[in-house]
Image (cartoon, rainbow, N blue to C red):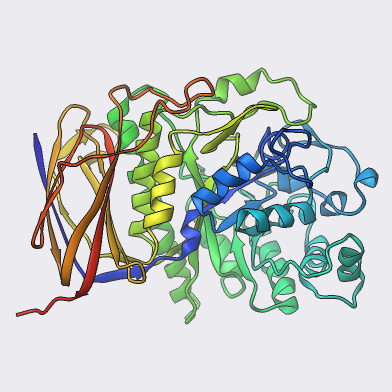
Length: 507
Ligand code: AHR
């Protein structure tokens, strides 16, 4: 058995958590939209053609913000195609995913879906094939109440009230040679600055996200961020980060350490943004929007043989294993650790394409393994992050160096009077005995210890067996006074919920 220690204290609050840390992403890609959120004729579909079984699962996740409509898709997207009478909308060839886009779901339909799902859209602009003019028209169409060409057009399209979309992404992965309209950092930085300027002239309260690097392996990383922010620092509010994790070599200890790459990435971008802040003698701080993150590799081979030019093809349909859920859990802990600066994060994506929710066309919807850590973090990780001191044994890893067996963070929700310890035991063989010191509250009680564990790291939830990997409660956890003892099974995601009341007195 391994031993570790955690100390947390009501007095040491690290940061408030922006609810948007639990955001997600819907792209016009594969079956995310067609066969995912939208399937007219499905037994559960409502009058708008939205699958209510999917809506229920999305609502269960309490996702506060959903990025839309891409992704790579957005870089050749003509937003005008996606509005107006359905029968007049064109079928287009989407070059990013080599699919046919029927434009049956567009901006107004997505806004309606988002309301039903209890979420807010985060709209990405096309800065690949288009620029300032299309962007300013789109923002007027979406957000202006009435009395102008584009706002009146929206009203004539059956959307009388402005959508009031707050967060806008200035393009997508513009550093990537695969992107339609890919740019150098100088070209993109200038364009982002000018598009941002136009949007802020329309409404200074809009929040704008500039594109950072597509991942940490990009040759231009992290000079890209420095150059881009040098151009648009004064205009934008966020710089984006994207990263996907893989277990190509079937090397679990390395895979479980992938969140360390996310950690380094975040620290590098905080440093880069703050370098530009000082260079510009600015009083403003640009925050981080980690608006694409997940495990993604299972579907790569299958995607190579998908025939082009169909509607809603089976693309990026990763079937997630239990070990993927552990990596997602470690990533959520990492995002919470940097909650002070990472104010938005989007699990990419939400339905069918690299997603926590899977469907069969005409059939059921179910929760993939990664649904659960995301659900727990979204439900119990709101409020504030506590400074959590951790002492844990480590293992040596050829890629990541020293990796802690215990990955953990604690949060405090004052309103709910709850503190939660999220913890992953990375050991494949050993139970981890955690001694915790919970200080500062008058009364502390254990609510429950939820665990996601499985003897087979490759276990997955499928249509045939949707309940193969599900969380359970364990009753071996003890709390005596301010002293916690918890046993974390080998390879496990843990959520230890505490009721915390009053302020204890310090002697
Ligand atoms: O999420 C899938 C794709 O990954 C997105 O379209 C793109 O932005 C990223 O490369």
